Image 1 (cartoon, helix red, strand yellow):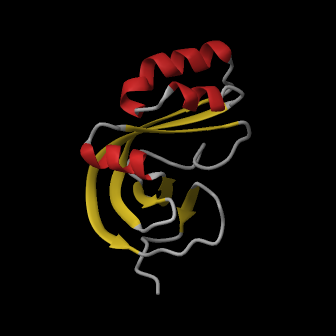
Image 2 (spheres, one colour):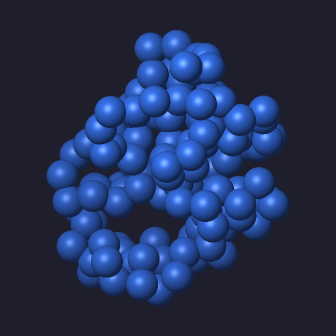
Length: 135
């Protein structure tokens, strides 16, 4: 079981905590994490962009899609738009994506905020272990 640090903007993190966003989606033009690296049962730690880690969840079913094109993106949008809580602009911004990772979120729970320093701008990091409070 691996640990993953998932960076989200506040509205998406709030939607996960409310239970209205039940699937996390990462789209990219190149193969990068979490594509191929997250598995059912892995622990996901949700960090607010510019803020602390505020929640954790377990990965449910994980789907990897490649290659994506116009018809596949349209099907993805139609099938997952409710569980993703994604605006149409999200799909427009990623219209050239070739890789998709879709993760069903299970056992979502808020946690006491954990300060966690990150020195890069990556939106997803595979962690060597469970995160701890950092000064």
